Length: 123
Image 1 (cartoon, rainbow, N blue to C red):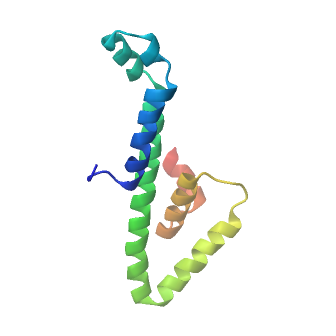
Image 2: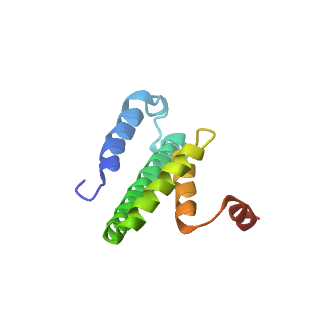
């Protein structure tokens, strides 16, 4: 477990508990091979992947933001301009957004992609 990140340390025992104590199939299916086929189709694994991917993306974004922050702080006014721009982005949001959409929108604003440009890039 030493090479697991914090989220894996949380999710791994949770999945074990679900499989060992909540899933009905280990009690109902005595054949190990048949049980493995059922487990391979289980949605829990897909949800765990989504949790870990989201955690890893958030962790990577935070690390990248810290690098950018350190660079901008050295530039003084650039840091202040970025903070004002981010504040403006949040003030302009007219609907709740998923964390990934917020991060993507902020990144696009930081690199200078305007909403109209984004739509043409997607098409």
